[in-house]
Length: 467
Image (cartoon, rainbow, N blue to C red; front, side, top):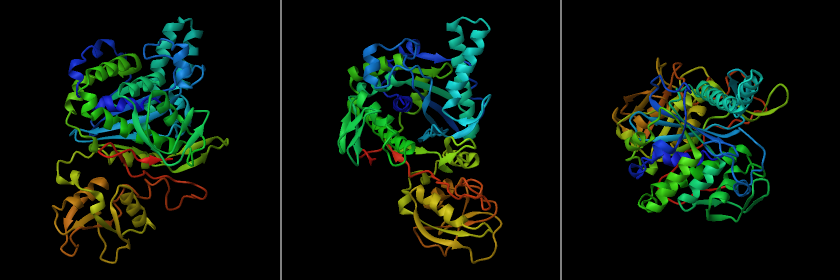
C-alpha cells in the first residue's frame, strides 16, 4: 500500500539538492530490463509491497509491526501498482492505478491477477534455487529480482508502454513518509469503523498521521465498490500528499527534509540506472495542477474466471489506448484549456452502433461538456475529424488530444465555444468499439464496466471527500 508516498518525492525533488547522501544510502535494484524504447513519455512503475522488512531486507521491530496493523505474516504481495506517465515535454504527470485483481497474462504463470506476478514468481524462483543448493540469502536476492522483472513485464504488456524506471516501497515507508510531512489531509463522506484495516475515522476533513493514513488507504471491506473505492482513497491521498510536499512549509523546513531523506533511505528501492536527483531537477517547475491521478478502464469489476475466482476483467486494447492518450507532448494552448468550458457535439458517420455515445461519454469523463450526440446526417467522411470555427481553436485541439491525436479542421458553421467531432471508420481512440472493453457483437450481459473516472488533481483546494 505504501507506493502512494513515493510519487510526491519522485516528481517534486525541490530541496533535494542538499540531500546527495541519498545516492549512497538508498537501496537499488539492478538488471530489471527497463527502458530501451521511446513511447512519448518517461514511464515509472511504483509498487507498494506488503512487506515486513525495510528496503534493505532488515526485519521490522515488534513495535513497528504493531503500528502497521498488518500482522506477522511474511508477504511479497504487491497490492498497490501505479504507472506514472511523464510526457517527454515534462509539463505534466499522470499516476495511473492498476487494480490489484486485474486479470492479465503473467510471463511464466499464465492468466492470473496482476498482484500475483511479483510474489508468485519470486516464490517459485526461490524454491527452484534452494532445491539447486543455492544459499538462502542468494536465492532470496535472485528470486526478488525475478519477481520484479515479472511484474514489469506484466504491466508493460497490459499498458503497451516501455517501463523506464522502477520504485518500490514497503508498509513502514508509507508511515515514515507521511509523518515526515506532518500528516496529510483527507475528507470522508461518512464515519468509518473497520477493524481489519484499523480504520476508525469520523466524517469530514481531518489530518491523518502515518499509521492512520495506512489504515485509510488499506481499507477495502465495507466500501460500496470494494477495491475501486480503495483506489479512489489512494488517489485523493496521493493528491493531498503531493500538495503538502509542494508547499513552502515542507520544502523550506530542514527538519522535514531530513526526515524525508531518512524515510527514503530506509524504505525506498529504486532501479540502479535512475538518477533520481537529476530527474527531479528536470521537473522542478511542475505545479500541483499538472499532477493527476487516474485509473485504467475496467471491463467488469465483478468478473469471474472459468474456475469461479473473483477478478477484475480488463480489455488490453482499451487500456493501451487509454494510456497512450496520456502521453501528450503538445506545446500548444490546448494544455491549459478547462475541459468544462468546451461543449462537444459528437456525430457517428460509421455503421458501429452506439459509437457516438461511447465517445461522448469518454470525453465527459475527461471533463468536457456534453453537446448533441447522434448519427451524422451529412455526406460520408473518410477520416475522423474535429471541427471548430478555427483550426487554431485551443478547445478543439484539447478535444483532438483527448481522442488520441485527431486532426482539427475549420468549419464556420460551428458556434464559438463548441467543438464538433465526426467519427469515421478509422477511429480507434477512447470509446471505440475495440477499446471500450466490449465489442458490437460481444455478450456483455452481467458485466459491470468502469471507464476511467475524471482525474483527481493535486492542484490547489482542500481534499476531495470520498467513501
